[in-house]
Image 1: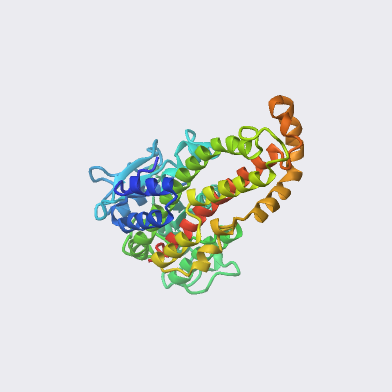
Image 2: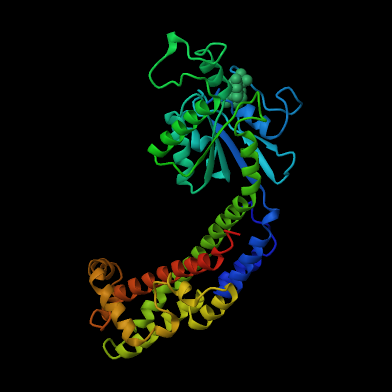
Length: 411
Ligand SMILES: Nc1nc2c(ncn2[C@@H]2O[C@H](COP(=O)(O)OP(=O)(O)O)[C@@H](O)[C@H]2O)c(=O)[nH]1
Ligand SMILES: [Mg+2]
């Protein structure tokens, strides 16, 4: 299910991949990335219940809690199910009000499955008054999925009011509440900085430091970090969308290549049988040279099935404006041109050791093939070699395309 990729050109991309045409595939992928403005971004607002998730959803949409269509607020009226709201100014952005992670219906260990975290592209974690283990758990899960989040410390008005209570009308610290590290003079900025630093430190300690922390009060959206947060979000939206699109695209490419690999896998048995001479020449030993020649052809075939040859790479490098070395750097298997009889012999020797156990199993069950036992290259070895090679070229093709699409993320 890939709802975020604009449909145009997707069939062409799949067809190019099926043909092993990396050049066309990369071009189609680039075209898809250029349609970035058409993709919808789903932003999930999450956190512990009661920390102000729904209030934040209303705030970011620029509406009052009492307006029609506002998310329900309150200690009792907790959000029961994830609810989506379109962003009033950016219709391709959907803001989702998620239930709190610690509500009875949504237990922490099942939360991620229940609210389908994988469906969202970007997260905002609301936290107050302190960073809890649930907050950390949320951040870690988001990071695990390779997605980004902002950390919002809500209700800072409450903190400021509480702190203010420790100072007199002139802003001087009252004697009764004078622990060591409180400044004598009331200073709002210092209090806010302390809160922010504490959040950052807690997140860093939990190894989720890539986040940004914003201090917010729903009662004063023009103050603290809410304006900056809005600006940051708007500024980062295009690159967030690009990242999302690239992720979906890579997933789709991977699935298509995987399917292609599965199809080719069905041919492996046949190819190994043929190369061992069972189907072609029932004279073991005689066809050793022919066998290897045939394997050379098979491996070259896999390379061209996945577009891994000098010509394709040269064109791809030119088309994507990347040095060919950069594309080659991610390729682990030999290119079509590098496949020789010598290389095949080397690969077979490498696989032979691994095939011993398997061959015992195989020959017990398929006695008819027993006649090739004396052949220079036993059947399981051939099969394993072909299988390994196929796995490698499929993985190489994916990596090459990833490199080819790379530069488009940072734009
Ligand atoms: N003082 C203050 N109260 C807030 C703030 N954000 C939310 N609240 C209150 O916290 C309670 C829970 O808010 P709600 O948005 O429903 O939290 P949710 O359960 O996380 O969705 C409500 O009474 C809100 O008015 C804030 O920034 N400052
Ligand atoms: Mg709520």
